[in-house]
Picture 1 (cartoon, chains in turn purple, green):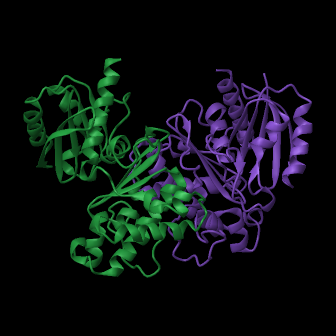
Picture 2 (cartoon, helix red, strand yellow):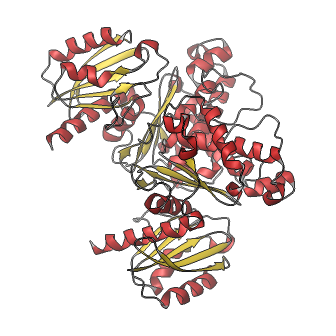
Picture 3 (cartoon, chains in turn yellow, brown):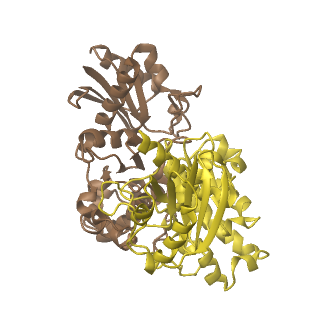
Length: 294
Length: 294
């Protein structure tokens, strides 16, 4: 069965054709311009294939409440053209097939849980550290939903005593994203992360903050696996520093050998690499398809 | 059907006899001395009644993994006599009936979700602020479990810039419990909370920290209801301050009218009062009973 997958990001859209077993046969990438322009490209791309369902993992915030009149909308995003965009509705106008819908990071968590680093595990988080910070989660085998959906990139954390940087989050200033996103790195050090690879203090501070976020998620969600991806996280030296900081912060309090002894296995990189999101969208589509068949 | 319920706390055990509809017919309270002494009292109390199941909500950390050889144990608690205590096993020696088992705060969340402030809601958190800070959670209609169980009282938060108190947590110093538990209040202000009712700055600071914890839980779990109980939280002026601080911290980012407009309904007190835990233990027992019947 052919399935369409969409990963909607703030700077680019990735669309793919795959199947229910996670094989991706084709991919296309285009910039996140306006909803109409993007939709045109999506329609052209998918119309050529005999797909049976579409899955969408997208930047948010989203309305995921199927009983709400604005279900399927991207709601109050700061991305101006995309505010209150009925993305599921727009797709439904062109494709009369089941459409799965969730956040980009929930989709990535689902992808990794289905075919990646958390296969066979009923609880995990997927954290991406890039321009922003996002985290998706699976709890008791299900995607974490609630009042809306989690937005864990914005949790509040303890400041490093020597850090005077005010933070870049337009809503919260010095939340996790405000202090540790790619954007925060660039504004704090006046250079992009890629140009700072050799500067130890950049990654020590980065790990100090990201590890606090992860420690908080461990204390709150007790995930069985923590997967860390994204452009900033691809810095080779970062993950070992994060692991060390998480152990130091928790300080033996969470007594499980995965944390005390096997933290390299516990805090890991995405096995699907940059395909985590698109694979997750395949799963969203597959679930929507089988749900509709019932 | 008569059911036995146990709420095991660090200073006292509450045992109750009730039924599957949440009626409590009798309760008894005794101090948390040693496991053997406590067990004697539990056995004497429950042996007189024709109960069909027992539910235990207890201080932790616990082993909740039914496939583990130490399932049913209180594991690495700092309470010396209770370290590695097989509480479910001890009960099973005396009572050949189904025994439900979870953390005290998960039980309280379950009680409130079944018969209290979160009835009919599939997602909520229950936070208790007393000597320590504990939080239980229901996600997608199920108790939150994972690698172990959540222990959200210990999340890291942003310090108040004027607060020089080092924190009382033996593991993390200035985590949420370290800065905002009843014990932290007593050590910071050299008086018990009850004697500080008139001192505005105590409750301003307390709300500053508790609201950060709650904001982090909202951003992480997106609960549909936040229930705040416990001795410290019973200070009349505290909850309104917490609500105001949560709104200020989130700063319009989580756009839901429950947070933006109806926060008094969203962040509420336990409807079951101090019976939340014991009612939750009735639900744990009921679930164990019906599970065994299948």
